[in-house]
Length: 251
Ligand SMILES: Nc1ncnc2c1ncn2[C@@H]1O[C@H](COP(=O)(O)OP(=O)(O)O)[C@@H](O)[C@H]1O
Ligand SMILES: [Mg+2]
Image 1: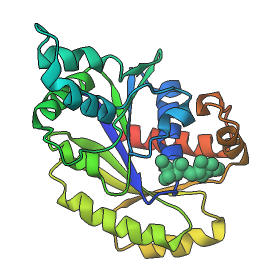
Image 2: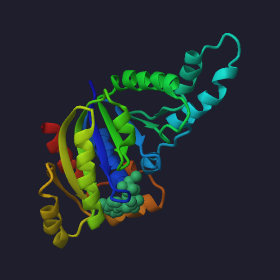
Image 3: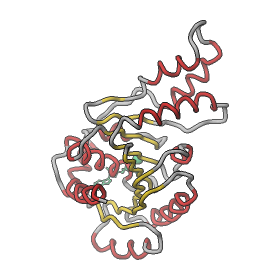
Image 4: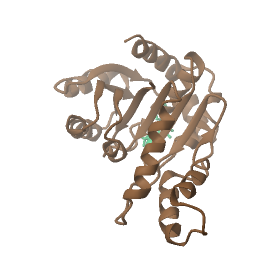
């Protein structure tokens, strides 16, 4: 069974960078294939990792719903969806990526969704790690009711709004039907002088403190230039994430 790590937090706090650094760590230091799941409708994990996405699960769902009543004779709905599934997995030697895209609209998606969910559940068993980049609302995660999350990481940056958001997320997490292993808070890009006051505000929450991923100019430049974070050769953010992930993997 795969070990699942889910990342969440307010928009702009560094969730995608944190997800990418975790995936980079696992790619370079852990055994086994990794499934990266981009569960933020504003999908950009693929861009940061340098793995292009052709089609999201949301695109496939909409497309299937449009065509489902006009399929050529002899092509069943299940076959049609299954044929589309291979287009949504972006494969690289150790890391595969799937983007969830938009969550469900007002149409009746039950049939298509049950096939897609079964597909996702079957698929995840063939990976050692599943790393999920979520939006703050945890929309996609709350729909995957059966899926266990081993490590849930809430990202907070120097914005006090991201602390308020962490509080709301903590409440959402407690309402999830998913089985959650450990819950953590991780700071991203916070200056030394702000770490203690932020920790004091976060202290009432039942989240283990993981540390602060320092601001890293080379990382920012890498993102700006559109280069994959896999090409980043060390640096303060990568070193800190390696230290944190080593701890998480030992627990
Ligand atoms: N530790 C860091 N060092 C340098 N730049 C960072 C760091 N964390 C985040 N950034 C920058 O902040 C931007 C927003 O982060 P991102 O991970 O996309 O936020 P979110 O996914 O939460 O919306 C990134 O594109 C990156 O340029
Ligand atoms: Mg993001």
